[in-house]
Image 1 (cartoon, helix red, strand yellow):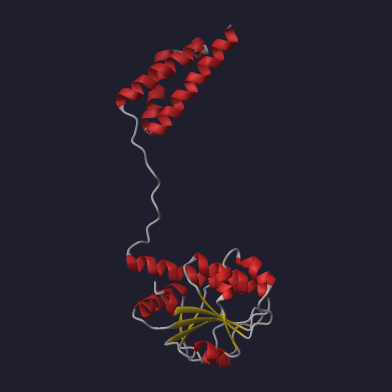
Image 2 (cartoon, rainbow, N blue to C red):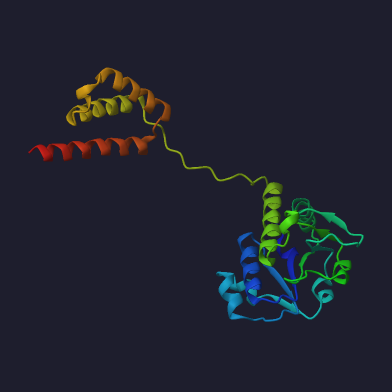
Length: 247
């Protein structure tokens, strides 16, 4: 993703902690360009604390007096708003927006995602400066997202759109080990039966039936080499404990 071409613009942010949290949200998803339009309190120790290490974004943040300055060189400006206004803007959801933004950024375009004030969002005048509006489809009964949470949603969708475009959007696979061989498992079953006999498990049951069921159990689970070694270790330690107790 051409991250240098995508900027997050926060307009007239009231609480400095939200600036820090937004910076953290950006950095976790690979974005680094932060613009602040007339913030109420910045720089701020609270912003640094809540950035959780994303202080480089705060130190390099561009502070402007007006939204017009923050987006002057942008080819695409997207305003984030929970409310659908009477302004004739194309309205899209975060996923569709992210796909379009990533494609435009890859082609060299400069894009701004604009977020408004905590209490009332963007004004109609500010929205008119945008090319389109992105709306996060939260539930109607409680539709107000925290500013940093809104930034996180958009940054996440941008990250996923970028990974999808590169074909790298797969969840990392769990490291797998070679399954224990048939010979190893036969050694385990012999060890298991020996241990169960030592602890007198078979006193009131048929050993052959029990071992058959245990074989079925372990055959279904197919232990790998690491798991096999753990099981053998448990049996060995059990035998040591039983023999000590009988001495």
